[in-house]
Image (cartoon, rainbow over all chains, first blue to last red; front, side, top):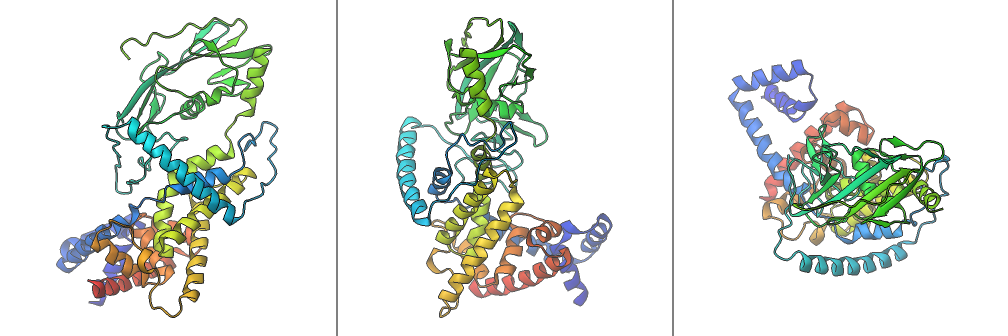
Length: 283
Length: 172
């Protein structure tokens, strides 16, 4: 009995055993009916625990935290390598007030969203034992989120629109690679991705999202900065012009929202070719 | 002139602390809340601790300090345990912690029984059980998170499991 208790102890930490010890343990279990019953019991108990991980946090927390965080513009890592001063933090009462206000805003937003997506099913795909089900933005844990863009094993088509990006370097087109957003390490597909080199950005997600061009570059894992646009480094004397839907864009390009048929053209010049537009026929 | 404006605007926007915070919240908000719910045994306390954890994360990020999942779990754990101890003192007259707000509305009776059994374990017992059985962490990973030796994790896990069986058996 003592022997079997010891084996049960080992069963609990089987994953942490050395390969040799694991093989010996498995060999013993295969020859020991009592131990097999212990394994079955442990598996039943493991199943008991699983629902504990499938809870949804209160909806207001995210908004409250983000609202309580100082405004953007204080870059985390500036080009000069300096960090912004430590922000002052609101009192818990202030946070509570923000939480209340954020909850109201979130509820209103939800109703609008629900009205807009009436009839659509916002499927949640959780693959794997530790998938975060029940979370509005749940994706498989293997693929880390980039902004609000998750990474799933399967294509998400509840929300499915296309945008387009073209980049010109001194008037010559820069190829936007195929398979941006295909995360082969985690075997998942980001909700923002490309299938070919046409520059078409597929936005396919389990819910309506408003990704930005900055998010796309982060999925691409290429910078969008003063000195670099994706793979292209600016040379001395060059600068950047941006067009959205064939109109000059004067804001921060990272913040361009990619919606249905948004067409972004980035010119690195001179020369600066005029906006060419994109034919979305069939998309 | 237009081009210069563009360049300056682009230069300002790199990966900000808020971007990083958003990424972290997307990835860890739900699992941390589930962890805190088991640790603290109360929905409101878990939500408060979660909020404070992410606010502290932002504080660190804004100062240029790195924040990762292990850091978040450590901070959340300390907050959860502090709150648990504070409430334990406040509710010294009652036997069990948590009470009505332990569970999540809509959970099965079986899950509620598991939560109730866990709430009768010590914090250290329930957290190793949770990290092992729900988050699927191995003993060395739990050890790194809790700052103890892997051998101690194994012993604690064994003890916690035996106690859980006893408590759960009494519940059902």
